[in-house]
Image (cartoon, rainbow, N blue to C red; front, side):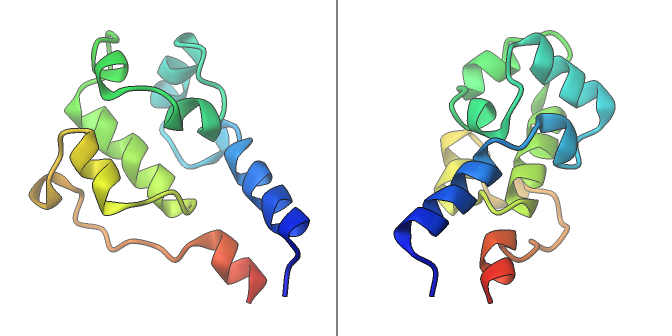
Length: 105
């Protein structure tokens, strides 16, 4: 069983992943980096309004960002709702398992 420090280190590693390494289109990663959002941690701390007020980021791009965050293990139902999207607006691809949980066990 992982210790609290190991778990925290794993979480920090996930949060510190570059936006260019989580499966986003190059154009989307470039837009995030133009906003000063270089890591998953940065993106998770950014508001929907900030993202959508950026030229080149619209609802489709927001869905792409959320889907990629989900694939690397940062998904909650409330996250989609907080960002103004309900289940009908999500992409239809099935969610992938949480990579942190799969790595542990």
